[in-house]
Length: 445
Image: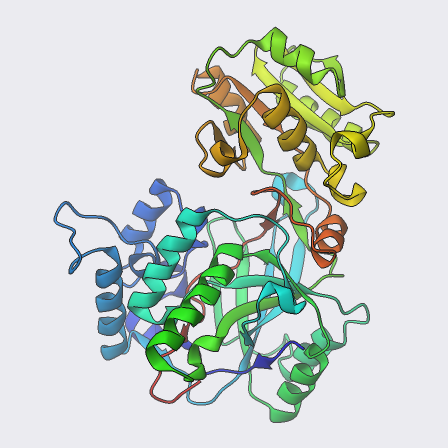
């Protein structure tokens, strides 16, 4: 049973910090060094100073990114740059903006922010859909121990074919009313939040969510960190229930604007890499179609052809330089059950799974441990960057991906099957800093 709670959100006070755009950020794991510098320059109150602090040469156990984050948070609360809501509420969260790469003119997505009781995956209430890395979880746990606050949103999907929950959100916060908060991000998406405090609306939504299964779309590291922090908190505070909850944004699985972008793989520092030997190994499982770089927009044509091929069967784009590019399409009669006996058919035919299990592990002999530690592999969202990494000699080969379908993510997650790391990239992201769940709020949850 999914237990959803309204809460007293901690939020930025515009009378102190000014425009919301200057203090909110993309999720911590999407913040590049260039973005981090821009956020720091935008405002002395930008949330990046808490969620992604800068290391200093004098860092020690007593003075480091985590202790400074806690000190900054305390200063902001004391100066009322951050203020607490007086009464518990749910928060409707709308996003409106351009689809990536001109796929469609405008996209609109609606969800709501609430607390949810943390459950182990084994309880069958919250389901992951991809593997995680240990490094980010250790980092986030130290931040949570220092600040006792959740600043980023865990993005969760739920199924509601009739849209009854979205209708309840709209009824209590009609679009004609001014939102509680509104900010535009660097990608042109407008983020609007309405406070929902009507007790009957809250009760209706909470009750409707009880029977829902929840699939994590984005925020696996944050969720698993919250589970680890719950254990730490209990060891320090006994039965105090505050760490039994985490902040989430819930989005309906059936919405038309649930977009997944592909995450491309760039391989580097491979010892004795040989293009022809690697291609011959790939041809054991895939059909190879070479491409050329002729014409003005060859990259666009390359990606369009990859998308078209992917509608028929699993396919990958491969780029190793000016004379080394083309597409790999899974052979129709390939015996996947024999090749990947440990995987169910629904997982075995996914592009990312085939890339990792057949090409990266078998053909290129890169171990799963090396992949987890990103020793020979980098993940990039923009395809142009994948091409450029090879052209500039920083990588030996790039694999260009099609997006994983949402239904495949949902179905495999509920069946208990997790995808390789970075198999999905949901777009647009949920901003950090719109609301925060502060465990030390003197008014309580």
